[in-house]
Amino acid sequence: MSRWSFYTSKEIKPQGWLRRQLELQAKGLSGNLDKMWPDVKDSAWIGGNRDGWERVPYWLDGFIPLAYLLEDADMIKRAERYIDAIISAQKPDGWICPCSDGERKGYDSWAVLLISKILTVYYDCSGDERIPEIIYKVLKNYYELLSSGEIKLFDWGRFRWYEGFIAVNFTYQRYKEDWLKELAVILKEQGADYNDFTELWKRPLNRWRFDTHIVNLAMMLKYEAVSCELLGEEYTDSAERLYGLLKQYNGTPVETFTGDECLSGLSPIQGTELCSVVEQMYSYELLYAHTGDNKWAERLEVLAFNALPATISDDMWTHQYVQMSNQIACQRFPGRSMFRTNNSEAHLFGLEPNFGCCTANFNQGWPKLALSVFMKDGNTVISSLPIPSELCTVDKHITLKTDYPFKNSLCYTIEAKTDFTFVVRIPSFAKRLRVNGEGVDCGELVFEVKAGSRREITVEFEAEAYLESRPNGLNTVKCGSLVFSLPIKYAAEKIEYERDGVERRFPYCDYEYIPLSDWNYAYCGDLLVLEEREVSDVPFSSELPPVVIKTVGKKINWGYEDGFETVCAKIPESTEPISDEKELTLWPYGCAKLRMTELPKI
Image 1 (spheres, rainbow, N blue to C red):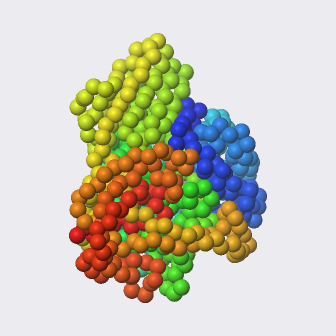
Image 2 (image 1 turned 90 degrees about the vertical axis):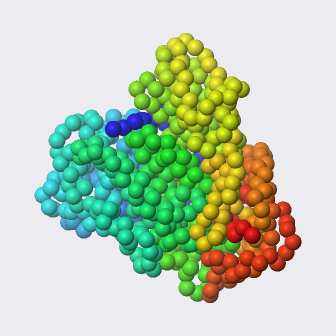
Image 3 (image 1 turned 60 degrees about the vertical axis):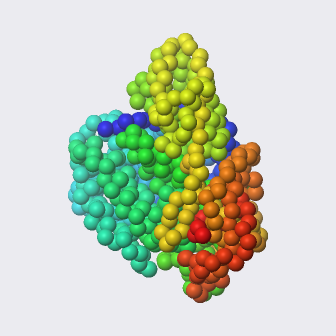
C-alpha cells in the first residue's frame, strides 16, 4: 500500500536553515553524548557497565542520519564504532541485546525491536552489506523465542510491538520467508490493542499507565500503516480516528498531546514530553509515506516548526523533558510537582531533566525530518516538505532554495538525465498561489520534466494569520504552519552539580528560566500584522525571531495556579482589563522559550 518511499542520506543534502539546524545539533548534545554522558559513553551495548537497554539505540537513531547527512567523517567513524561493537557482541543464535542468556526472559524486548529498527537506519545511511543478515538473525532468533513461548511481550515491548515492523518489513522485502509473516502475527497478538483503551484518554488521571503513556501513543499512531500489508489486512485509517480522540481530549495548539508523562487533558499548563514530539513526527513521516495523505505532512510541519524547537535551547546543549503551551517560568517547584507523574524539574532546560530517555531520543527529530523532504514513487518525485535541501541521484538533481516556513517562496532548480514527473505538495492553507509569477489554482502542482533539460520553477503563495479557538474561552494565533505566542523575557540561571555519578557542567548543565516581563495579557481585537525578518544563524532563535506578528492587547488579572508562584492559572481569574491597549509582538512558538500561547480575547 506504500505510496511514497524515502531517499537515502547519500541522496538528500540539507541546505540553508535546515543545514544550520543540523550543524547546531552536531555541535551540541547530540554530537557529544558519546564523549560525556555515561549512559552512552560507558553503555553495556559497547562493553561498559551503564544502561544496556534503550539509550544507546535511541541516540544512534538520530546520531547516525545526522552524521551521514552532514557527511561528517569523525561522526560517521564514531557511529561505526558503536555499530561494530553491537554486531560483534551478537550471540551465535542471533540474540543481540546486552544481557546474559538467563536474563532474556525478564529482559523487556522493546530493546530488540528498537535496535533492529536502528540497524535499518544504519543500513539506509551507510549501505553496509553486513546489516541485512545481522537483522535477519536477530529477528529469526526473536521469532523462535516468541513462538516457543520462551519469552513473550510484556510492558514496553507489549505496548510498542508495531515498532518491530520497521525491521520486519525491511527483512521481508529481501528474504520473502513465511516465518516473518508469522512473526508479524505474533507481535500483533501479543501486543496491546490501543482501540481497547480510548475511554481512558477522555479524562486525565494522576496515575502512570502504559495505555495512556504519551510516548507510546505518539508511536502507536503509525501501527496500522506499518503492519497492515505484512498482516494481509485492509488499511482503514484508524490513525485518523485515534488522532481525533487524542486531539479532542488532550490536544495542544502545536499538534502535540499533553502527557506529563501520561495523558493530561486540555490544560495549557500541563506538559508534553519531548520524546513524544519526535516519535509523533516519525509516525507522521511514515503515515505520509505509506498513505500519501497530505494531512500527515501538514501535521508534521506544525510539530517540527513549533513543538520541537520550543523545547530545546538555541545551542542544542540542553532540553526540557516537558513543555507547556502557557509557560511563564521554568523553575523548580518548591513543593509538589505541577505535573501529573513527572517531577518538579521536568520543565527545566538541562542535560536530563526528570529522566534521561529524552536526552538520547530527541536526536532523531531534525535528521529524520531532513530525510523526508523529498520522496519517490517509481518515476515520480515529490517535494513533500518544502524546506531548503537538495536531491542528488544518478539521473536527477533538484535544488530547493527557500526560507519556508518563515517565508512562502520556493525556488526549484531541476536538472534531469531522464524523464520524470515532479510534484510539489502545496499546503492546504496556501492562498493566491503563483508559479513563475502566474496565478494558478491552489492544490498539488505536477510538472513533467524531460531528459536533458534544465528547469527553474518558482512557487509563491500567501498564508493568512488568524485566531483559532481553544478550550476554556482561550485563543491561539496561527499563520500557515507556525503557531505564535507572546514571548516572555527571561534570565537563564545556570546550575552545575553532580547526581548519581552524572556531572552537569557547562555547556550541558541545567538552567532555570526566570521571567522578567509581563505575561498577563488578553487580545483585544482581530488585528494581526505579519512582519518578516531575516533568518539568523539560529533558525528558531530565542533572540532574533525570523518572523513576528503585531497585534494589540490589554493586561488582565490572570492570577496563578493554586499553590504555585511560577505557573499561571489554567484560566484567567478575570478578563476585565487593568491597563490601556498596548501593541504586542508575537513570536513563533518555537522561538519563545517562555511564552503565553493561549489567551482570552476581550
